Length: 496
Image (cartoon, rainbow, N blue to C red; front, side):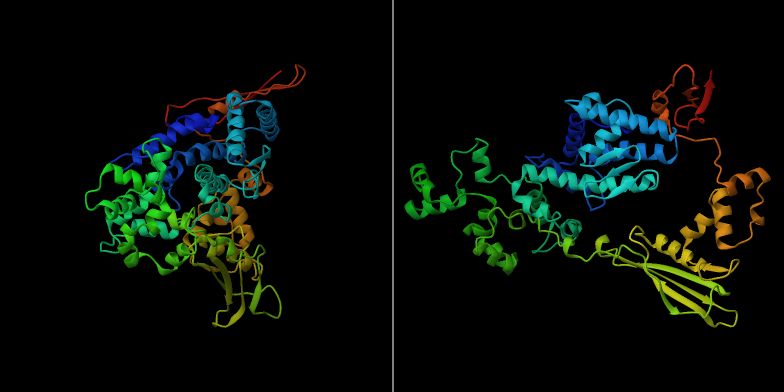
């Protein structure tokens, strides 16, 4: 279902078929019953980080493929710029851009445009939330993560189009789904919360509730009045077994059977409301706030993330024990930490600290601070702490680091990076034992000519660019290994 989409992207019609197939596979035993596609796939995700929706791969694959091509230099920078410029010009002039989507560059541009991104050239884009990214600076993982966030916002925009009642919540940053996921994953089984109420919540969220008003619009019912209230009025008029004429006579007096009436006003559900419904919501509905409100009708409450203070965009450095002069000597103890990330990433805060201790146990220097905003995890904070330590101590000082990812990154890096790290930390490089040529290449910033690519990159061999007859013609040839393994390096063959 997803073969080849990393190269040419996924057209809207194909993506719709993929998503409908995934929605059908995740439907309950009774079928989809009119579920809203995006909300149904959100529930299939199972959490805020789930990716059961095929839209994630349909967007992340082409964008990640292009980011990888730029990052690993599959083609020269000038060739990438020409390919992207040609794709931008061709798609902008096309009546249907996806009909002109041929090749990785066009797939990247068309996919990014569908998410609301602005592609400036082969190396720079601006996401739908205004974040500027550089493909030559930010690694492919950054683009895949940004793409996944954009897909989630794109889905909520689709929900807004089909369900206008959610517009106010989505414009404020989207609903707060954290309590919803907590309730759906709960194993509680009592009168207040049990498998039946969890199923009812899923049904309300996915728009599987077929009220009398909705059925009347679909042409299934003769009127849009609540049947429970209509039957109660007919009983009051004729007795326990009212006739069809009595029901028809009471139709104008019965209230409209919509979600707000079913949840908060229908007398047939008054006992459950008095036991389970919060008093604040009951009072809000009594003030006329229930009709068309997604919070009362679908349990989609507005998010308050826009009220959370943003992290500082600038890194900070604060002395705790300031030495009289720099640099100092001693053992360097570094640490980085993060708190509240298990609650929500938006409220997470990071910090770092460095302590320099002499052999007699005396602290000669100590500092703390916060890392820059682009560091979002503990290994990043640990690495930033190591960086701050190098500005304090003498080269060759021993380090005590308790972050295994940072230690592994130092010891498992490529030869050139290990030499750079060793020189940066002031450590001895004799343990690496590089040859003279490799040491010279590493220190001078030279890169090896070999490039390993994935099987999907054979499409890049089709993007041939030739100069005039008086110039050198560069032909990209790819030698295949057997299927499932990597390709040999792309060889640049010059012909007169």
